Image (tube, rainbow, N blue to C red; front, side, top):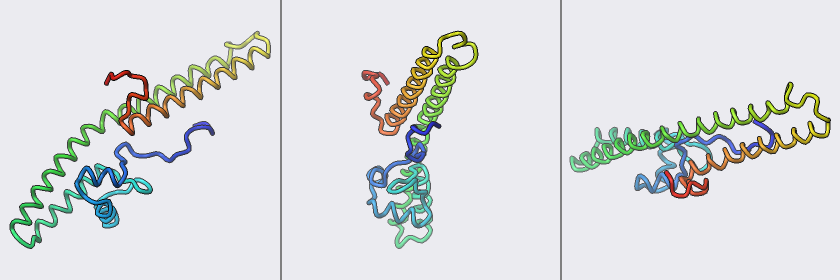
Length: 173
């Protein structure tokens, strides 16, 4: 990736903030941190957690708690919560697959566009043209590649936040 590319570390497709994860599961942010520290979920950088990992880990944690309930009612509550978390995990996985596919498509599209743009600056494309025109074409190609990379970053951010309106889709989904 070029030096001007986004320097932020890669965020897994299912990475969410601890606060968002807590709201989704009805848990406090501190409880989410405890689950991460306890090895029941995988963190995804500072203040973030991998949602699928958290859902699986919390579900497994609740199932394990069933084997040592204080009362039968507590066991049934844990079983119900574990079933709910399991179904949420499957729904979330189904939602994530199109997002992962979209990210792969964005990356592939960027690579193809950049390769084609670079084709204008190599070999026979500029042969016989004055040096000034060759340099101007190379500068324009570099700008085009930067614009393609910026568009990819914008699209990834829109996928991450769910704000597809910023891509100018006009309500199309």
